[in-house]
Amino acid sequence: MKLLKDFEGRLDRHILLFCDAIKRTSSDGLKRLDFAEHIREDIRAEAIIFTSAALEGVAAFLSPFVDNLIQHPEVYAELRAEIDRAKACGFLSSPVAKYEETCKLPFFMACILETLRHDAPAQTILPRYVSADGIFAHNTFIPGGTEMAASPYIIHRDLKVFGADADQFRPQRWLDDPAKRERMERFGMWFGYGDRECPGKNFAFLEVQKIGLELFRRFEVQSATPEKRFRHERWAVAMFWNHWLQFKER
Image (cartoon, rainbow, N blue to C red):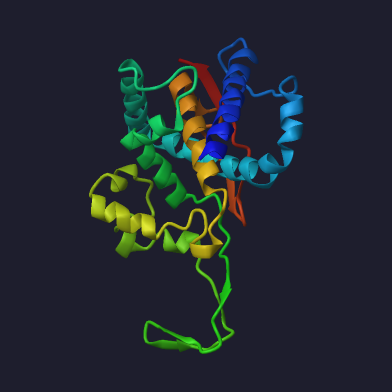
């Protein structure tokens, strides 16, 4: 827990610099990112963490998170209203919201979980070998030594688990019923599963929740090329090209 708290403090510095860079790098209201002048020593010191897991994984989450909200204006509006209410009531710390505070925003968390389900950042199937004695699965014998795996993309679109509209982005499904939500979370493979689950899972949630909230707390976000969606490939980690955005300070 202490390690997670220490990491959150360092992350807060990066989030503030990130938001400041967006505000200062354009004068016409259309914002661009430029980190050339920022925190060279911090970036060098944490390069391994940020390149091996945090950078790719968080980017693979944030791109579809932002895009799904832009593509669904009614969801965007509801999320922004929830953040604004929390801010007006003094529920969000300043200058950066605490992780525990983001967890208490139900619709925001529903958007987080729905993005993880609909566009899981990690698409690896994590194969396993069946033990020597073999197993029975759905009345079928699978001999020992057989390599087996499950695709997150397919699991997350199981109609029996996630509903008839499983192929659609609909955060409200996570708010419909507590028992249903618990069942859906059991089938979530966004960080692997079982003993193959990502050891950095808690750090990942910390990052995506804090960064995701601050982006929509501070900026109006829209696509710079609404006539053309970005390219999205589901490799071991989801990859994106030509995802151009416009940021306007709120």
